[in-house]
Length: 637
Picture (cartoon, rainbow, N blue to C red):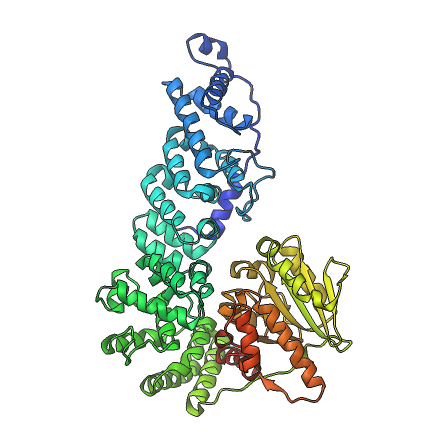
């Protein structure tokens, strides 16, 4: 069985009903059937309400009772036992899910826009689920399934029940599969916020829903399902976050790492190789070797059916980036495994396909870690790829052109081993009045109670801010204008940035919020491919992985990124902004331009970055992969 995200959304649209059931006329013979010993809906409702009072169940709304009574009116066998069991089940669900779990929603269900992070989430999902006739019927027949899921999910019950609406046939036919999967998801490290994200992914992330359906159909194992979920960039970032945050607390860092099961550790090294500090990556590799009990990495990948997959390539990129590939004492691959894996690493270059911007971006960023033998192999394959691109008419002109350009750029780097050193030039990011324009956009959902407040405190040294026409806070200094904006929702943030771009085409732009919120607040087409200069700090832990999307959507825009794990930590973004403000003043006074590397890695600035939760060694500005993409899309070199 297969289903796309679009099909799931269409299913939601079909199942949307009014929260309050409509009244219907009683059929002819109603009084007669009641006289024959069957209870009327009103009598069942009364019994249900009495049992609710008896068992002291709080918050069950009238419309749910009425809907259950309508079902029981047609299924009256052992009705007292059924009522007792259903009320008891509602009580257990409420106890498991937390305060106000059974409370009716304050707003209607919106298909395709499920958000379960607010305090009303459980009640809202609960009522929207049981407002679907198919779901209510399954609940009335098999309430224990829902109780078990709630007891596993706890405060994530709202997200779990919201997801169930898309998989009702499996709830009925394969309940244990659903229970096992949901219980495993609820145990994922990171608690409520992470498990809620996973439940939403089961609805709206096409790849995740596909793997989940394959699991429900018996085509893949629960372990493989979990590996696919846990290695997803948004989930991996959240699970790996403590390893970076505990950088200076070795005891607690080791304790957290040792608490992670093998499948979690494996998933982290299979995730996007741009994530986590160098020391965190090395700890993960060490722990994986320890948990593998003498098995090679290839044997572990074979165990989960992952040889030759994208996750396998991610592991290779990560091992190369951190000197853990092969040939050294701490290597995670044997010589034999490395030879096999190198073929996997380079396989996309041999395939007749379009331009995979993410693959080429990751390949470019790992080239500096290749030893001479590996470089020779990559050089040979890139040469073949470049030649083949000329004849691959099946790719279409654009795809062949992009593969040719990417291969040419990387060949030039490998042959000359010279990476372009990019300068930070603040004059590119000044507003029309000559001031450096710095704009920070905040996700209200993610930062209202912390970074939004902390940033105001940080910039308060420049005096009381003015309030702009959209509610933005504007701090002025001699050489800079700092704008802080937090919209009520993602759309407001998008409109604010678009409005600024219509007036000021050059700026230093940052996003403050989690990586999974970046695309919602500042989608990759936010710049509208404008002819402008943007220094972009996505400011979330997984921001580096977004670089290829932004560059490919905005080839005319001069985009430079400062992005890596560090930009999502502490107050690093504000520290970077201040470093660049100081650099701007120095250059205005006649100083020479410096490269990003020189600016970020000098002793004083490194101390500032570290003091605010980051590590200058993990910050990348205009990486080789970014330079390659700019060359592919607009010919810069």
